[in-house]
Length: 289
Image (cartoon, rainbow, N blue to C red; front, side, top):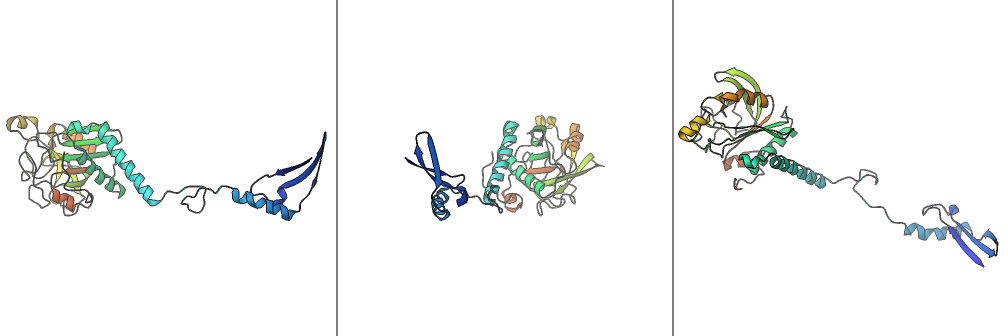
């Protein structure tokens, strides 16, 4: 009886590594002698080469062993991560129950991320948000610890006397306008002034709040920012444009946010969204919560 055995050690082996031997078997005995030449062995080798599965293809930087994501995939992944980060903070801190709209928080975080990426923030753990779309009798200042997922302060804050009475409707970057300025600020150093312990602010948006230093727009404590005035007349006192805070714990607030944190002052002013380079992609016609 004739038996053919083929020993294939690897699909891509050389012809010499393929042994094709014809055996003549008898009971209890097997002998074998080579039959074909190397040329014929090569011919037998060809089908196995083409039958081998092709490796998967990836965008690479020179090798096929390490997959490389394309740019669009990176951008989409980063965007998804940022959105998840924002949503996680907003939901876990229950900011909605404190009166901060998700949309306002998203605007604040978008500018925060811009300032962070451009190296403008010395302290990236804290963000302060003022929501001037709310009545001044509401606690509309939110100071958030992004690292430890904690609302550090949620309290009252004053707007400029010429911005409105209970609500702030008008905003300006002009000196002596006595109006509040919207947008993103970087907190700076502290000092002792006519209003006591105070905090310098640097406006980060040209033509919107970049006159903050010239206008002496700072954070300071004020006795007119208190609940007694709310009970008496329905709104707190107003400033000359500064985001003044309650006098009884203004020092704690200033010490928490000083030296290079992000402050965002929001207001229902559609012209701001059309002019702001930081969040100009936002839709100014979206309804506010």
